[in-house]
Length: 84
View 1: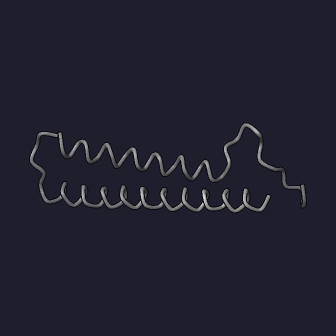
View 2: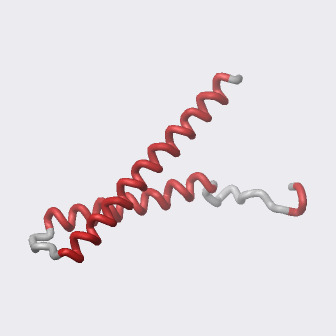
């Protein structure tokens, strides 16, 4: 490779796969947070409600970003296929 940099190893996930995996973890945490809030069985105070609001915001942002990344990747694949 140019300038002595080694390419990605075949057994290593691509940067895109790493990003999607990280977003998947964030979505899983968000789902767990919402599940716990809905079925937790205890009344939440102001601090807990603010933490829940922040967690749900992060969850919705992760879902939105994941959808955008998948849409861009799909568009890119479509462009490459049409060019052949």
